[in-house]
Image (tube, rainbow, N blue to C red; front, side):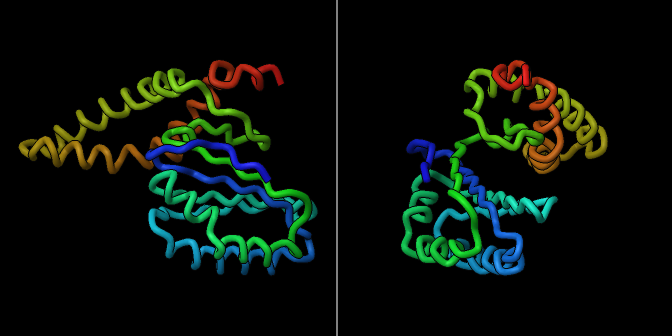
Length: 192
């Protein structure tokens, strides 16, 4: 089990991939609920997402944990509490655990239709694509809000813009942009 990543004060996303024995899926579902109750007590924990398998014959679970910064993720990943819970899951799982860390905006640049993990794109590519992705919706949102809420303070309009745009960027715009610019972000996968 190799953990990729380096020290950073940026937000950290930890991706864990496990194959579950088909006969133990219900047990593993309970395990996920229980371990979530434990990890949420750790400093800097921001949340957990679980991507469940579509095919129970090949039950691959992807667990995504988010932390405020690297030190918080390290505290959890090296804790005795986590080790005990991982040990409890061993009889439910098959093969090795795959773990990868992503820092900052790297999770925005994940290929949603790509089941294998690859290195994140170069930071300059992530920066350029983020600017390209955020500028048009930011201009549109700012213009519409300025018309709808004429006379409101600028800082409040910016806050409303951020509240609207961050979820849109996370769930819709960046996944779409990542697929659209896949050939440039991930040239090694463009040919496949």
